[in-house]
Length: 273
Ligand SMILES: Cc1ncc(C[n+]2csc(CCOP(=O)(O)OP(=O)(O)O)c2C)c(N)n1
Ligand code: SF4
Image (cartoon, rainbow, N blue to C red; front, side, top):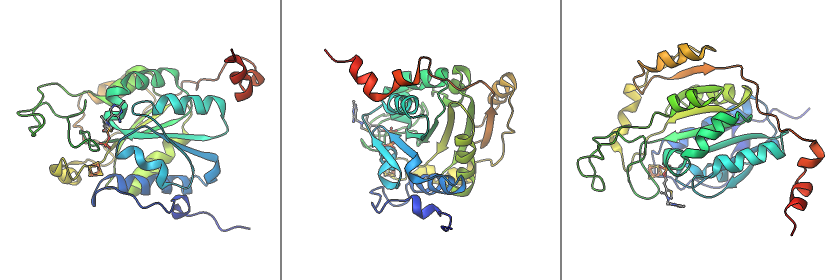
């Protein structure tokens, strides 16, 4: 019998180019730990992303990967899962990728409830393009590119996910890779669209986020399947409350139509001119 895979078996030999101390190192550790915990064969997993520092993650795993275009990771991941329901699909990215240019896809991925997991590394900034504010940036964050802050209220991803139909909603912290691995494993196991918000500091453009480790509140959420209760709980969210907020029972989307009509060859034939 082969020895069970460990998390390092899910890592590629590509060395991350992230800045030293970037929170995303903890996320790749957690993601690979979750795969090992669930004993998934690397070839049965696809990690799909858009563009951003965080979106580089697929290259750092030994699973199938797709590093696509900015803001379109959920569209690619959804198509993949519908065409290949046998794969475990994990979509990864940042707050800019997922909530600005990709915001509409986020809403409809929650609504469609396709069985995939979406892990967003939220650092409340566009890291890759050198520090512009994102939808989750605090209105008073003063920087060279946003003197005196944008004055715009933050987008609340977990509230949007709940109200748009996501079947599993959680928050975790990159500085706690074991806790994060546990949440990601639960998210993958849970049927339907699972959303995990990961607080993942950008130490270069938001060095003050190094203090997040003092602000996070572990196990602050108690998982519930009651949507109204989860929504009420969000009214007293500190932004640093961690844990599984909601685990619902809405059936995951199943494509209608005959399986043979959904084969890639059949779909391609439909586009022939
Ligand atoms: C269509 C398009 N628009 C804009 C960009 C420039 N761009 C690249 S990454 C990025 C934002 C990345 O921010 P985020 O998703 O939060 O990821 P982070 O780098 O912080 O991990 C932007 C605006 C692009 N690559 N493509
Ligand atoms: S710029 Fe920020 S998000 Fe990008 S690698 Fe560096 S620390 Fe990480």
